[in-house]
Length: 78
Image (spheres, rainbow, N blue to C red):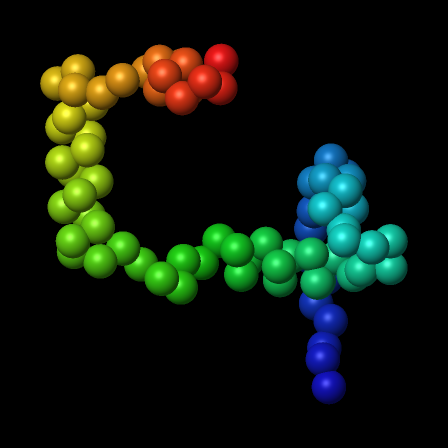
């Protein structure tokens, strides 16, 4: 059986939690549980992915990239 534990939450935070409800009867516990689950990355980056990100970051810092608008224009989206 679940137990309840009061927590102190500012009114503005409570209002924001209420806005995140999927349906009006969803409990604040359910909303908080969903947010906590979303915050935990259950698939951390692999070593290869971390290296690829470092390479991409170095490319951007060196100016080796094309602006998104240019790519979209080349493909007829703009």
